[in-house]
Image (tube, each protein chain N blue to C red):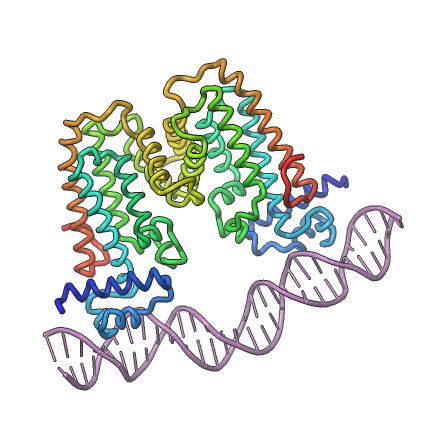
Length: 230
Length: 230
DNA sequence: GGATGACCAGATTTCGTATCTGGTCACGAG
DNA sequence: CTCGTGACCAGATACGAAATCTGGTCATCC
């Protein structure tokens, strides 16, 4: 059994159990048992129980990023902010762990859902968003009648609202369409996007995503609880 | 001491205490003491502890409605949905109890913040919103490229997001402006509103608000935990 | 050298007791 | 008679100490 593979098995076990039982009920011993290893071995891969579950969440975020990257590769028009938000919503609805994360589900994530320090990705994600918004603005794919900070707050708030609002009036696809409409109307220019601008922005955006992806992947591999990209 | 005045004093005492101590710590006896009456007398005005605090919240909502009504009277342009949402946000930020309500502050409101049944105004508010949206659409003050249910969900989600998102990037006025921008872009026609339409819509909207106000005021006065308007 | 599980301190749960409080109602004041 | 009151009760809640559990370590063994 390869070293990296064992780390993956531990994360698999932890992810499975946290969904079944909820964060507070999952013990390290049970995770080890599921992974077919001894308890001490878990600590050869993860510095603490908390950090293990943070890594579970980070790995899930990685998958989300991969999905967005693939979508942009498929169609550069996907770089537009409203489309990114829409795809994110759909992917989150598909994945129970991400959904628990975005809805701050205390039942599943326990105290992990509350404590902002528990999410080191937070600041990296914020930096990524800032980069992304700057790029889109420079390429004329986002309006500039609001300053960047306001736009970031707007998207954050709107996403929070759509994730937390219960009693959706339809299927995830329909809700995602409404979310798309909201972000598009608030932040994108009224005119259709210039295909040349899309083609120009896409590679730069992809590069930022890849860098972000690398940073997060490193964090999982190196056990580092703090510190930015190299 | 007039009958109605005593009810008001009880509500004053309860409102004061709930803000100081939080819902779960406030006892009926303490409320009675503050109101200068005996414990049993509280139950002559409110059928239960829970209902008493629901009434506190309802009274607060009444003040909010009054504020909106006054604003529309001052300037019919205020009937527009984005403006309504903006004014609501500002008024909520000004009033600690409303803020606790809209942010579902468990520290202040305790279980009252969680339980949806605790808020009988919920359905009345939903009906009011539906009426309002219908009116605005009929007068060409709201777009019709989304169906009514989607628009209501959109506004609900956006408001939820702006109330729950922490770390606002500026003053309440600035956040309110961003909220206004979002709702306006998503739901209002791109063209400036027709003054005649505003003048025509305003009285109808005011009538709905007044009817809503009456329903809520009745609920407080009559101790009725259920049931719609007469 | 790398994996393990016995071990420990501190956190958490349990469970029986004591206290508190929502809601009632018999009584007394006016 | 009407209206307000606070003593009263059952059930909820808070408390506390004992018992249990579990995160994290490390001496041991493969």
